[in-house]
Image 1 (tube, helix red, strand yellow):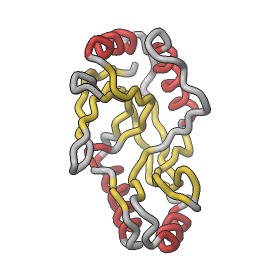
Image 2 (tube, helix red, strand yellow):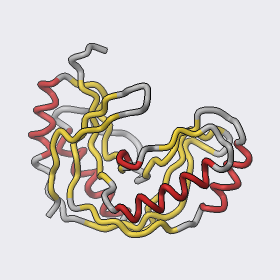
Image 3 (cartoon, one colour):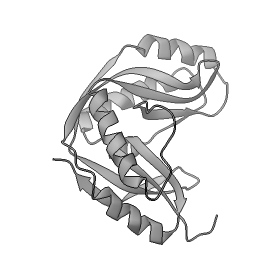
Image 4 (spheres, rainbow, N blue to C red):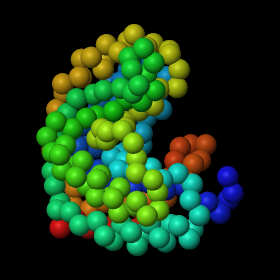
Length: 188
């Protein structure tokens, strides 16, 4: 990886402070299990629409141009339920799901990916809207962690509105990633 490459992704940032507070409450509950977790920082909570990886600066400019083509309405989703990837037998990621508005989320995902076809191959597989809230670093206290997740499985966090999406740069540091907006795209 050359230092001139920029690690990028396209996201829907979570902006509602009250929802962030509720997510931090859930993160505290997960942490109380004694599991070995790396929690996603409050300012980094987002839905990823597309991870682009390391790309050269010239391509960053082309991505900015292509994303101008994305036309979509602002929309609301209901955040509900806690899940894991890839499975309970080997938890890597803990996430919050979407119970309403998933169709709108998939619509913007499709529009973003269609806009990027000239620059990137189309992603395979189905898009599963999820908001990562923690990463699991080891198997420590896994059974206790699973009990907490099972208890929160159907928990409703609340409604959020998305009126923009972001093209972001991610800088990896020993303390965790630092995200900054390369460009913000308003939704109608």
